[in-house]
Image 1 (cartoon, rainbow, N blue to C red):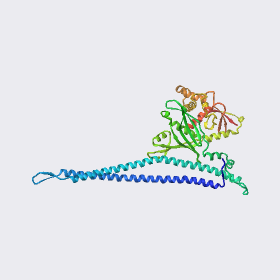
Image 2 (cartoon, rainbow, N blue to C red; image 1 turned 90 degrees about the vertical axis):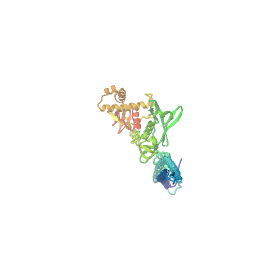
Image 3 (spheres, rainbow, N blue to C red; image 1 turned 180 degrees about the vertical axis):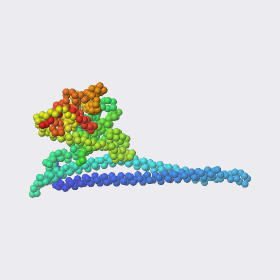
Length: 468
């Protein structure tokens, strides 16, 4: 599809209009919040009035009751010496009248309490929607303005170098062609409004009962959907939006829905870990989402912080992420793009290497790749990388591998698989980056995915051949 514009200023006006639209809506939200706050304050001020009316009615009743009792207790003697009581009917009427006033005051106070609860309930329901709307405004404002800025910059650059003669009949700037000449990648950014998403298509985990489960990740226009298939039926487990910002990508948790058959398996933390892995793969500086009051503790247990707390409703939960996975991978691929492998002759021996600086195996997303050596696939390799790291820590603390082998045979085997046996990981080194040269694809990929899941990069030992 081709677009033509006569004036770039029209795009600038559109950019400004989008920004003003979002700002105006934020002002409206602020105004609504102000009205809501005033309404609640006024209602709460009325509570003391209704309480005082009830208190006055009760005090009047106590006084009337005391007067009635005094009247009924008092008596007088007639001329014959006979004792008589006074007529207390007027006092009784006053007591009955006070009782009615108390009932009315209680009724008014009850009506007030129901009204207050109704308003508070409406506000409780309003806040999540308001926060989602504000998040949408912020997101769409950033995405739309970022895309328009790229288009405007590209168009202006094109005009500056390719403006036709003023005498020619020019129907307008062919924007698609213009931007493509400056930066072809802008066409994609302008079309979908988001960066290209890196997705680890398969994510597996052990449930509470020890069973192995797998979910699939798919991306479309910045939204990563995680699904679980059971008996031919596909369940959406979670949705994550990757938002491109000038300051860095942001991961937004849109939804988390655990299929009924997995609710007893306690898989919520695995779904969150899966979304965090996607965020780290795409260089997100943060992941965040809205959690109601019942779920805030769950996120805090996963090291999330809170902000924008709303009492009785919930809070925005977030976790800072320090991930340069995507940019590091790009740098590694560029380092080897024009490298002549015949120049890699300087063998420097075994070294510990940051797995993020190694170009990922092409098959990292393929299930058959992970099940090539083990039916449990990736999870077995993840277990191996964890045990390998623990074993290294014990060795640093003075334990010997023989001692570790006696106390935890599987841990020693994991260490052997990475270090001691003949199947050493072999890498080519060019500058600060590496490429697999033979053995080690599964172990490298496992260490990289372990980082995406946990944020921890565990150095792995490899034999290095360096570019002279």
